[in-house]
Amino acid sequence: MNKPFSLRIFVADGDPDGLRVVERSNWIGKALMFPRALLPRVKERDELKQTGVYLLIGPREDGEGDLLYIGEGDPVRPRLECHYAHKDFWTHALCFIAAPGQLNKAHVQFLEANLIRMAKAARRVPLDNGNQPMEPSLSEADRADMLVFLENVLGMLPVMGVHAFEKGVQPAAAVTPSLVLRGKGITASGFEASQGFVVRAGSLAVGDTVPSMQQHVRGMYDLRQQLIGNGVMARDGDGYRFSQDYVFTSPSTAAAVVLGRSANGRVEWKDAQGRTLKALQAGEASA
Image (cartoon, rainbow, N blue to C red; front, side, top):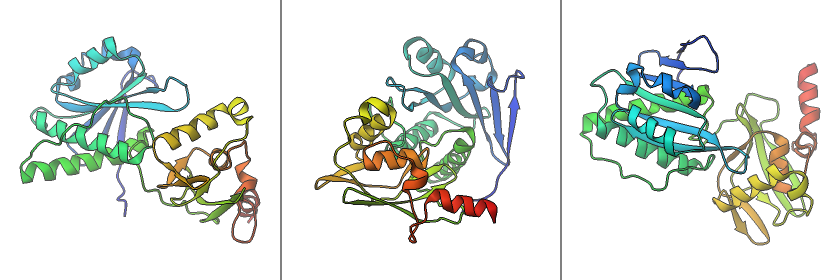
């Protein structure tokens, strides 16, 4: 069960899109989130002189969705300066640090290794990292401390708009906890969640897209190809089967990927009585 917590977000320069310093209640850590263009100024801050772990976030080359790089630095600043000069894709950085002496090189290597492992397992955002680093040996006490640090980081990331590490998603409290989509001999099931629309593991998708999908809804076509490529959709006979729950941004995107064509998810997804998601939501809104 998730535990409630509070965050304090300090907008350091008065610009909501600029540097944000995020602190969590009863935690030794701190997060800094800022756009790439501000690094020449932000790098002078004392926080980036500390040991920490960081995420670089930016658009993929095809423009559909994000790309993510996970790294560590002892301290963080030289690593960010290197990426500023040599890594082109990223537009925002998110750094997690602590007060001096709280984190060491082995600690942040542990955090980096686990974040990369979890992002790969979730398969929600492709990584720019080439390899899976080995988890360093830590004492029993240090490992316990870093697991708590990691848990706090993972709890903060969705609030800061990063969902790359989430695998299991719970249904939203709604009148339609379970919906079904059928077409061309396949059946998929899903539900609405706070993050979007979730297609459940085991759902089936058509084997081929219609010819017009690549031209008219290219983003959904590319997403479908990505999910096939990374194993979220695995070959099953003439079609594909979802190997895990997967969160789509909307019911329509989920329906299009499953059916291999453009689709209005609010009329394609239906409950056990055949009522569309649109009708169910209209009924709930008027109740």
